[in-house]
Every structure is written in C-alpha cells, then in structure tokens.
Length: 94
Image (cartoon, rainbow, N blue to C red; front, side, top):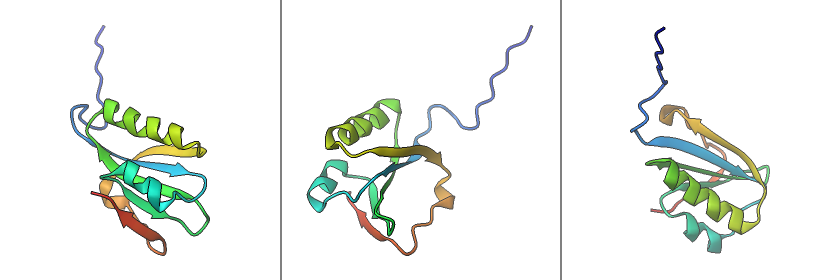
C-alpha cells in the first residue's frame, strides 16, 4: 500500500494569512501586530494580513488577538496575489 501526501504548498514555506476581527482595532493596539497590514473595513471589521513563517508565529498572533478580547470572525490562508483591500483604510506596521 502506497501512502502519498501531496500538499498544496511546501510545509517549510511561509504562508500569508488573513485574520478578521469584529470591530475596529484601535490605533494604540495596532502596534501589537507589527509586520501585519491592518485594514479597517467599512463594515466595522478589522482585517489583518501578513506572512507567518511557521505555525508558532501564527499562534503568537492569535494569542495577541485573544488578549484583545475582540471576537475572531475568521482565519484564512490566502494566495498573496489575490489580496484586494480597495475602499478600506489600510495601515501597515513594519
């Protein structure tokens, strides 16, 4: 019996994630998420987009989200070429 695993991407490669929160993140709290693009959406949500080098980095960001007390609406891995944030206020923290 052959067991072949063919993931969509190489597990050693960084992944771009989008994290959506209910409510707008305050400017003061944006500093917690250095390196992420933070978009304050017109519908009142906050979208954070950035590259995570591994699962540990992702969990570190999610821990900060938990500490904010803001509801986590979604977490998705995305194709870097498909990002569109037109019509929203965007802040980059690097």
